[in-house]
Image: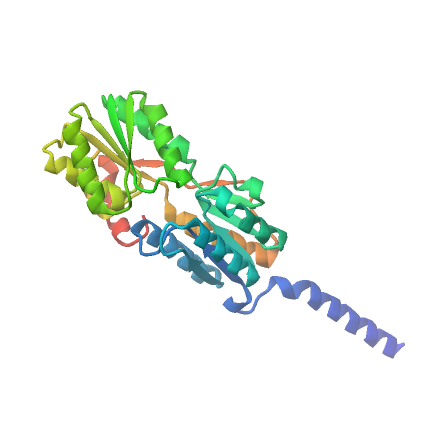
Length: 316
């Protein structure tokens, strides 16, 4: 009987260890999460996303790896996702600026049993591609809200500066802005070169004296040169300028009355929260039951000064 009892205890111990061990990793190396975005960490906006990823990795004690193509390149991004899948991480975080180009790669990850969370862009296609949830803002709705606000300020003739044509999220921002604004809106396509944006916006202002509103789609790359273009044209106070996202310099322009507002989608949370969710999923099988909206929040003159410092620190 003693031998039988000893064997039973041993068997119970083995079963107990088998059931518990997977949910109690000993170190960060036990859980590996890969992030593949379309935005380079050198971009001021995406550097904040990466800061969120890194902080979540530290807070959750997991290994994180942020990857992005050198330019806005969907072929290269799909290849990065495929490479990540081959490494069999415990979780994959992706932005989805172009579902047609990235869909097959994301589906491969899901088919391989890798939990996927999308962030920043792709809220409208995330679920159909198999992602567990999306962390970000509804870009069309955010653009519409901005357009309505600028129309309420008296705007009738608008310009939407699109610095990354083909990025579905940015296209949706312009579409939403046009819908909410209700007046005449011209889409001004540019690259993400601030110098080009400055010159093109100055040319547009010079050629159309009716422009009273300009919507930029990114604070550092586009919003700041748009404000400068309005200054150079002597139109401060006559043209309302707003932008998506934040930068310390643009927020200062808002605080100084040179710009109307910035739309904060809290991209730090877009990097931070998916890592937290995937770490808890790897450890405990937990996952939120739906998408998490990180924005939009309008940062107007009364709030701008409070946010400048956090923006300079790479958090807002």
